[in-house]
Image (cartoon, rainbow, N blue to C red):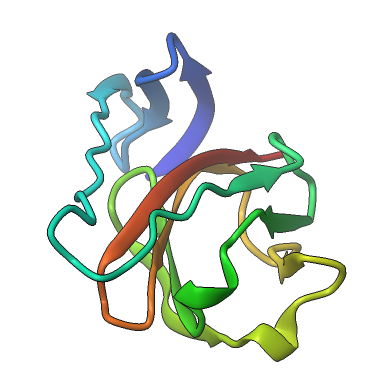
Amino acid sequence: TRILNRLIITDTIFGINYESEFGCDSIVIYDVTVRTSSTENTNVESSTFSLFPNPTNGNVWLKGLALDVFPITVSLFSATGASVFQNRTFHQTNLKGHAIELDLGEIANGLYFLKIENKSGHLLGVEKFIKN
C-alpha cells in the first residue's frame, strides 16, 4: 500500500488517497471526533494550553500548562489511531520559558493527535496538528 495524497476536508473530516498492493486507487474518508474528559469533581485545576506552530515541519511547543498539573505525560497518535509514542513524561524542569518543546522532526508528514494527561492520569486535552 502506498499513500498518494492526504485530503483535509474540514476540521474533523479528512481523506487518504492510496494505491493498494494490486495497483487500485482508493480513497478512505475519516470523520474524527475528539472528546476530552472533564476534570469536574477532582482536585485538579483545569489547565488551558496551546500547541504551536500548527502546522509544523519539526518541533512543536506546549504553552500555558499550569504548574500544578506537572508532571504530565504526552502520547502521540496518527490519524489512523496508531501509537507513535506513549507516556513521555515531562516535569517542571523541562519547561523552557513556560513552554515544553517536543521534537517531532523524525515523524512522517500527516495528521496527528497529541494527548496530554496530568500527574493523576486525568486527561487535560487532545490537540490535533499537522506535520508537513
